[in-house]
Amino acid sequence: MLYTLAAYLMWGFFPAFFPLLLPADPLEILAHRVVWTAVLVGAYLLATGGWRELQAFSLRTWGWMAACGVAIAINWGVYVVAINTNHVADAALGYFINPLVAVCLGIIFLKEQLRRGQLAAVIIAAVAVLWLTFMTGQTPYISLALALSFGIYGLLKKQISVSSTGSVAAETLVMVPLALGYLIYLEAGGQGTFFNQGPLHPLLLISAGLVTALPLLCFAQGAKHLPLATIGMLQYITPTMQMLWALFVTQEHMPPERWVGFIIIWVAVVVYLIDLLRHRPRRVRRTTGRPAGE
Figure 1 (cartoon, one colour):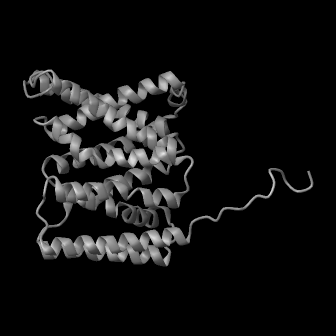
Figure 2 (figure 1 turned 90 degrees about the vertical axis):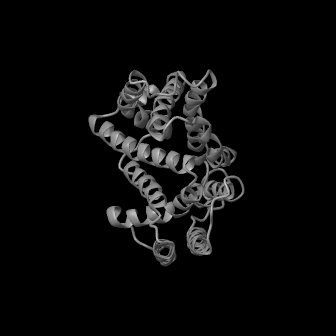
Figure 3 (figure 1 turned 180 degrees about the vertical axis):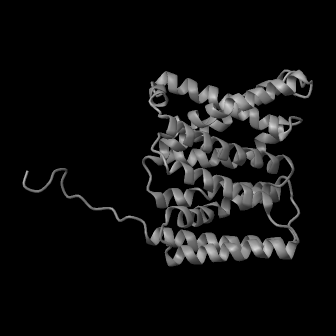
């Protein structure tokens, strides 16, 4: 559990990190995240021998990896925009509703059956989105973009059987040509910030790869040993930390109508978690280490 907990805590502190990368714009930050994450995860696979998994990928698998790469790049990019434009609460909202969006995508594309608790949670979340849209006069585009992009990313990953580290490496590798090309274009045109913001700035941009890769690797290690219900509860650590950051650090404006919308979302989350706990697999108690009769 410690690895998984560490991953969610690191993700929760992302709002403290990305403003340090200014004045780089969101696209430049995204490009650096992709390039340096690919470098670090690739080096990890080389050191551990995991590179052989990527060599065995079929063309079809690489196609799915490319689709996953596009989905997660959109998610990363929108998140950076949210953090660096003081929309941290919108980012938190996106990750509060993400599991409910994932449930909807599973029903639509995987023909999964919807339990009563899941249906209630989805309906309550939909009411919250409609409330926020009509009562605040603004559709929560950032929240919906984050939830949908990450939900689609998870849906795409269900189509293939690949290790978590191999998946992250492949997803970033397929995006590296675009990301690297964009960075070269910026620097050639004098618009990049890598070389002209002092000695600390390039180190911070490079560290974006470590900040991205480390929680992913911790999550991959920890999730293998935890039941789904536990992961389902732990995942709300991150948006809770983001919400607290929005309230007490960036002090985002939260009118009463917005608070009501968030409260409705939290009700949906509680209903979702109760359903998750009620339907968690029961552990079979073993009295001996061997089958009876041996």
